[in-house]
Length: 182
Image 1 (spheres, helix red, strand yellow):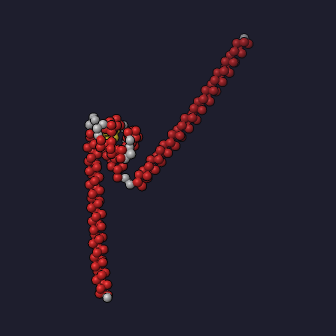
Image 2 (spheres, helix red, strand yellow):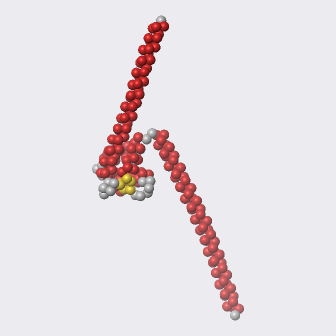
Image 3 (cartoon, one colour):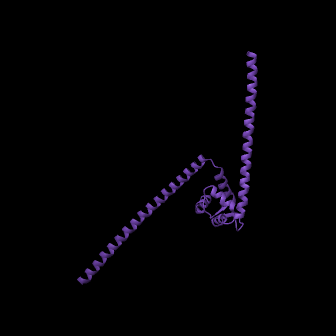
């Protein structure tokens, strides 16, 4: 009986080892396929970028993106719609890609944003949204502080104007009383 259990253990360990090796090989194969898919997507978007780029300067402007969306580039429109980006969202989407606020987005920035959007995990996406919200809140706080400073300075200027008016009125009154007394 012990010999039979030993053989069964040996056979079972052989099966587990081969299943583990097959799983590892499958994991490696999927990683290679995902990498190849990413490279194909990147190449596809680079070719689409060059077709959208009307002036062939290596950058895509907001107008070129909108024209590319509206023109015969069905691939662009279909893909962006699959990401829930409609025509009216394009300007905001462009602003998110144009981090340098230059009015142009390089092919690399454009393709990176689209490939990332296509392959991004929902948790990473939510983290990105949260970080963007924090940036927005920080900017709002900065602008609020600047507005408060402007309001304080406006109040000071208005106070100074009122003081000058009062002084000017007092001076006029004194001049008039001096004229009447003479």
